[in-house]
Image (cartoon, rainbow, N blue to C red; front, side):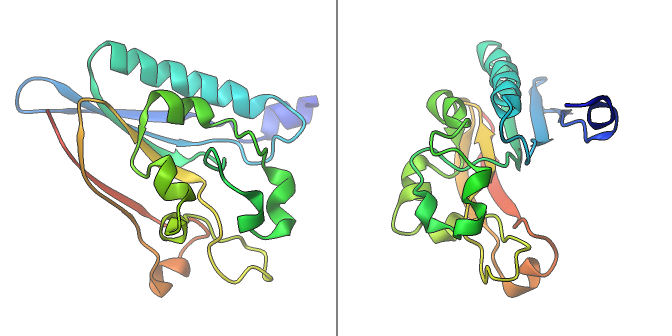
Length: 176
């Protein structure tokens, strides 16, 4: 982009916090918010590659970790026709997030995100007034092989829908 775009646009990043665990190890909690409007650029691929490398390093070091956030990408295998046509131009059918699903565990599996109950996992409700309900998943939690997922859900109550255009994700894990 132009100089003003580069200088003043949001700088997307990953926030990492290390929590000490009783056995002397560390739990890495990571949060991110990736770019939403990168059509025509390879920004999304670059951001996913960065996240993939970061998570791969933690996995190779046998670290316990989880990462959640707004990835602004649809899950692999999704049918774009499941969401309102006004949003189609924001997404690629061959989603850039696929490498994360291939190499890491997602709290909501691809089968769940593409299955008959997929609406239970929708995380985004567009600000477009013609869209009357959440219609896509673009927020995720990925986690280490060493963690045991106990529970995962997306809070979709009417009260929650009034707070943000993104719905809260809740996951419970057991440490190794």
